[in-house]
Amino acid sequence: TGVQTCALPISFSSAGAEITGCGGVSVTADPTNGPLAAKATCVTSALPAGTTDLTAGYGGDSNYGTGIATITGYVISKANDVITNLTVPSQGLVGTTGTVSATGGGSSNPVTFKVDTTGTTNNSCSVSGNQITYLAAGTCVIDADQVGDSNHNDATEVVSNPISVVAGQAKLT
Image 1 (cartoon, rainbow, N blue to C red):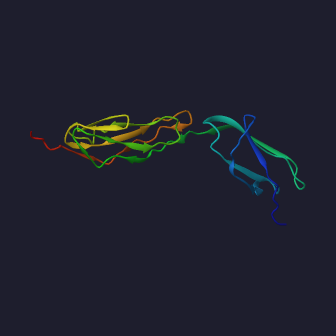
Image 2: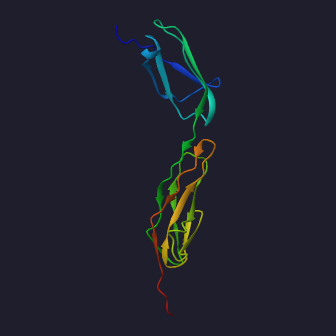
Image 3: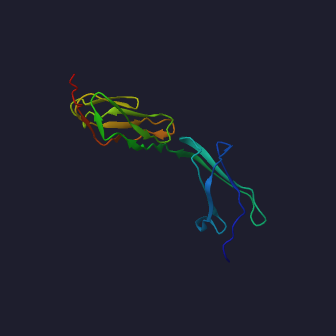
């Protein structure tokens, strides 16, 4: 009686190539498949999205013989991109510029910025790259987007807090 454990390592492969970076490898008893059956788990982000065959192999030890399990046609989904830390100035002065920044997700594509036409009033601003130009008094709102890639879905658009754009004082000479 009692729980017996096998000596690690258990190797994991996909399409014949070893999967490296298996963080969180664990082996747990699986009595539904027999008294000596176990489940091995590999948590990794090293595999690309798509369909692959996965294999887990155990080389054996003094208590247990070798074992191998294969899953064919395993579907690996794309990860979701998430934009964080969208930062804009709280106020802008007509005729000046400001900077917008954000941190993108794992996609290989950059975060891009555009004027939010719903929240912006009086055509108060424009954006090029990460530079905001204040054009007229009003409210300026900026949207941040990131297009996904072969392993990542597009990020959900993030909308900035409103920027209050104020007119400068006239200079009399």
